[in-house]
Amino acid sequence: MKHHIKSIVEINDNKKSRYFAFFIQALILISIITFSIETIPNLKPETRVTLQVIEWFSVIVFSFEYILRIYVADNKPKFIFSFFGIIDLLAILPFYLSFGVDLRSLRALRFLRLFRILKLVRYNRALNHFTSAIKSAKEEIFLFIFITLILIYFSAVGIYYFENEAQPEHFSSIFDSLWWAIITLTTVGYGDVYPITVGGKVFTFIILMIGLGIVAIPTGIISSALTKSVDKNHKTTEEN
Image 1 (cartoon, rainbow, N blue to C red):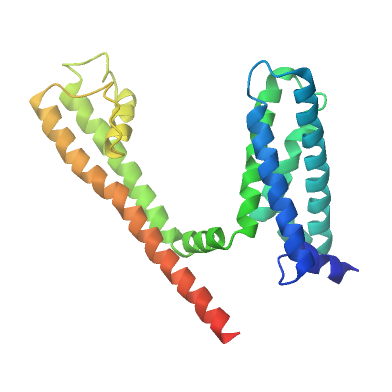
Image 2: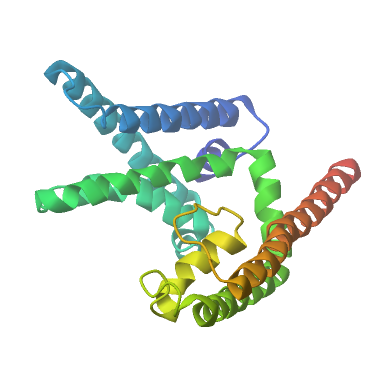
C-alpha cells in the first residue's frame, strides 16, 4: 500500500501520478486566484462564502497531501525539514493558525498563503533546472552578494562625504545614504534623491557604471549554471 501511494504522490511516469500532479497544480492556481479575489473591496457576502469554501477544500486537500508525503517518505525528518516539506507546511499552516488569533494578526497570516505558489516548483521541470542551477552556482552567488553589499556600503559612504554638507536633509548620515546607494547600484534611480555637487555627480557616474555590471553578472552566472544543468539532465536521459 505504501509503495502504491508513493508511486502516485511522488512524480512518476504513470497516469495516476500525472493526474494527481495536475490536480494539485490546478488547486494551487485556484487557491492563488481566490487569495487575490479576497482583496477586492465590497465583495458580496455570497462571494465571500464561496471563497471560504474553496479555501477550506484547498486546505483539506493540501493537508491530506502533506500527511501522505510524510507517510511515504523514506526519511521522514529529512522530508519535513526539506525545502518542499517546509513549503508544504507553510501552505496550510496559516489556515490552522488563524483559529483563535487576534484579528490584527490575521492579515499577516493570510499573506503566508502566498507560499502555496512555491509548491508549483515541485511539478515544473524548468523550475527544477533553475533550482539545480542555483545550487550548483551557490558559491559564486554568495560571493557576488557579499561583494554587492560591500559596494553598497562603499557607495553610501562616498555619497555621504560628497553630499552631506550640500543636502543634509537627504544625506544626514551613512544610513540615510544607503537608500541612494541601493537605487543607484540597481540602476533604478527613482529621482527622489540625487547629487547636486560636482564630486557627487562624478561619483554617481562611476557607481552607475558599476551598477550595470552588478545587474549583468548574476545573469551570466545563473545562465551558465542553467545550461550545465540542462545538458546534464539530457545526458542522464539519453543514458537511461
